[in-house]
Amino acid sequence: MKNIKKEIQRHLKLCNLAFFIVKDADVAKDIAQESWIIIIHKLETLQETSKFKSWAISIVNRRAIDWIRTNNRERIKLEKSFNESEKEDSFSKVDDTTAIKKVLLEAIEKLSVEHQMVLRLFYKESYSLKEISDLLQISIGTTKSRLFHAREKLKTKLKHSRHER
Image (cartoon, helix red, strand yellow):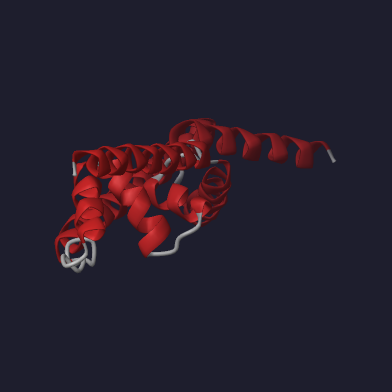
């Protein structure tokens, strides 16, 4: 029973280390679990048993950093894909015969990339707030805030454009 508690404590330490790096509890648990698999398979390669703790920590550390790198690559691909398809997308193919659509398009194009991205993912791609927050690696609160502020900016710009006519 004492050994089980000790192993649970070791596992929690590995989870905490991974969490410190990736800032996501579920991912940290997965990294710790994957690290244990690596540790078990590579245990015979460990030459000095006194260095087990630092060896295990280095494995978790590398796995967490690999996860961050992979995640960043995916985020960059998503942003590039968004920027490229933005040019070809229906935002830019809006039927210009309707004045309000043209004004709306211009207003959307004046928004920041973050606001445009949240608007597109929410309205065009029909992603949920949770899915958007996962894709962009931001909190749900930040996602809601960006969506709210994007809508408010659009409302303001559309009101001003009506008064100009």
